[in-house]
Amino acid sequence: MGKEERKRMVLGLLVESGLELPPAVIFDNLKRRGATFERRSVDNYLHELREEGLVKRTDESKGYNIATEKGRDRYYGTN
Image (cartoon, rainbow, N blue to C red):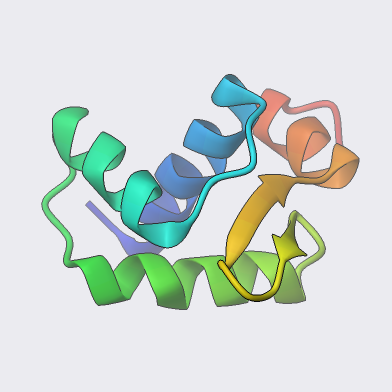
């Protein structure tokens, strides 16, 4: 599984859930979906997804993240 596919898994979890989630919860749920990458990778992918405007941080102190409209469009292939 390549990096872009792993980033898509992170984005997909946020898009499909519609929730604001911290990295640890994202990681735990991705592991349940079969992800094999490490917890620190989730932080890296979230950082990149935020830079791309696909995810935004909603709570700086807790590190909660949510998919943006652009992220939802990208995930569903409408952008």
